[in-house]
Length: 84
Image (cartoon, rainbow, N blue to C red; front, side):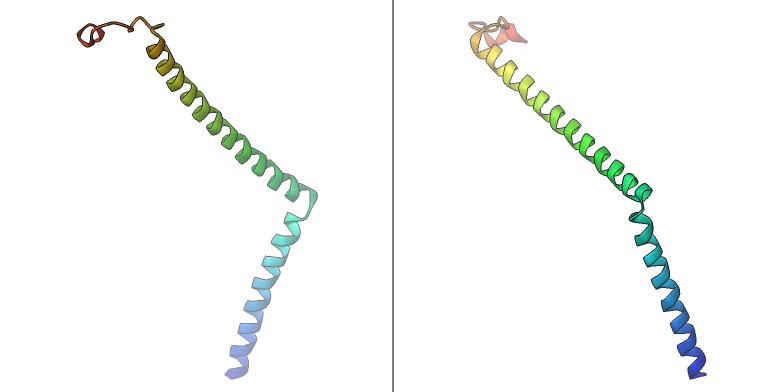
């Protein structure tokens, strides 16, 4: 009974090790590297898009504050009741 247990344990460990090694070997093939590279580029593009959106929103806020402060938007000298 003990031998059967150890045999089953050895087979299980061997199968798990082979799966892990074959996945690692697949990642090292040209197609595996290309897939990883493509996913990384997609993530980078999304991060750049998010950053550009944040910068654009900040620019719009700052421009609105400058317009309000300089009176370009027509609110300089206006009473608060007139702005609503």
